[in-house]
Length: 96
Image (tube, rainbow, N blue to C red):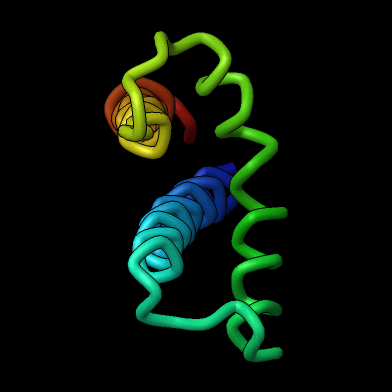
């Protein structure tokens, strides 16, 4: 059972890095540093969008409109960190 919890923690940690990569790529596209006409950039952007948008969309709907500022990745990262802490401190020690 601990192996399953370890895998869950690793997947959550990986998802945080994917959220960070998606946020950085969105900034690079917004400031015209990278061009989405490049097939590789378009493929990476599409992958990151498809992997992060299912969890970010409900958070965006719940948050108030802050103009051009999107804090939904930060909120999701905080939620993931909370889940990791609950698993580490409360669930992991109980599992034998």
